[in-house]
View (tube, rainbow, N blue to C red):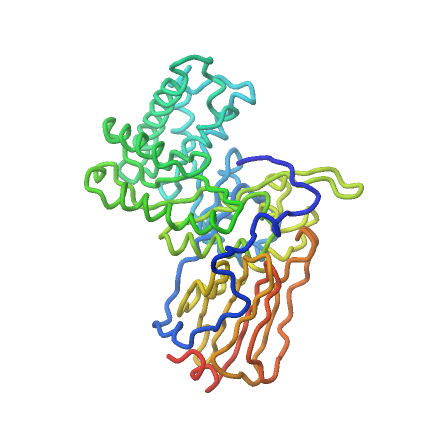
Length: 432
């Protein structure tokens, strides 16, 4: 997790500038894009910290259908809420131990104490939890500051990190046997070389890594699209390559994402999820950040104010980003298609009930764009999730408005739109 204070306004218009070579003002929603058989898809959205035992309400959490939920010292207390929402608990073991910035000693300085603490956490949480060993070990604040400056600092830091991973794995394995689920290396940013060194070390040491995890914080549209490429590269190299079969990587997890610069932009958040899904991620978890002071309100961290990592205001009211996430979660039920329509433009189609089609269309662009429908719809309903200002203001649940004879949808920058229609028009536009 990173705690970088936001500027007064989210600078999405600059950071998410359209790809100039492919910029388009209009695209057509393909008539054949939802031919697939409807099936439930596990939504890959996840949370980091996010809530207490009582706040926010269960209803606000359940609507998002989080798949993973990572926390530190509070994990055991809020694990029942995690499981009730359908999320797999992810225990950040390093949060429980502490960091150099907290004045804590290094785990390898007393490996027996560290191992005992890990065993206690494993006994508390059970075999279904994922045990993430160390948060951002390529950061000085979280790991590197335990090592003196010198020519072997990087090598020493990595060797000691691998010692710590092995100790954590042996401790969880002693409690849960072959069901032990270890995640790592949870580095800050995708780094293929660092992942390969980690996998080589685990192979030599005989350590199984159930979940290969890293953090990814793109701030440009090209960077968001690269999430998919990173996942495909990592899968080929570390899951499909028989060399690493003994390490046993079962899934790829982006353990933190959604940078502070795009934290409240509905369209950008859906873009992250589209490319993570397309790359085969088991999950993409929303990072939490510091929010700047506003008026008489002091700066606050949305890691610790029970705001679902800033999807809610500090007072607990949903923001536009919350409703976009809820729409994405709903799109996973009876999904019939997901497609990138143009750079920064995405569509998810589902059939919640027979004869009823719902299409979520999200723009991660900085300029308006129109989406033409293959044919005119009579009596379709449309709900809009726009970015207003910097996105931090509360937004009531967007209402559906019936729109007669609709043939196109105009999307503002960073807007998410949900289109719903039924009957013969549905079969004509998105045939089964």
